[in-house]
Length: 135
Picture 1: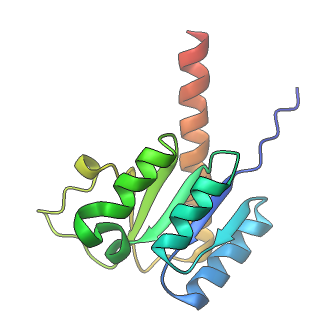
Picture 2: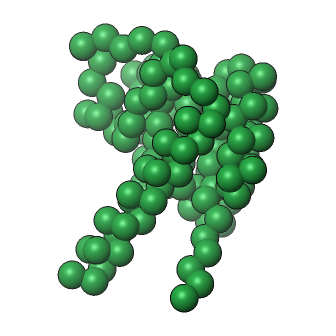
Picture 3: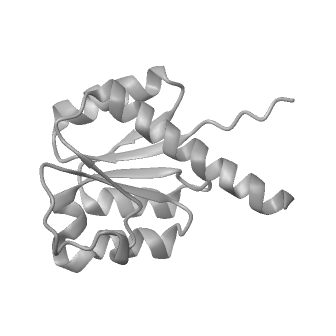
């Protein structure tokens, strides 16, 4: 019965303490976490790793910079990776989905709730893929 894939997540939150806390929670939940500091680190890590990353969690300001350059590059390198943006607020004119973002999480949110949300989104995606293959 044992299908055991360890979820892999890149954190690019532009805040060292937030990266550490969220990373710790996700680690306790059984995830492989990459805490990165810059957009370039994120893209080079995606290029370097042999397996696909499940989720990139990125601060809104980094994701939308230069007309969603990071998001579009993630899509080119790793099309199956889920992109989740953390934002303090969103405007109606920000069309995240049209730019390739899968989910937006508004702050404040606890690290525990954020970790659960990420794992739930990964599970939902996996179930959808299983259903598509079997049916």
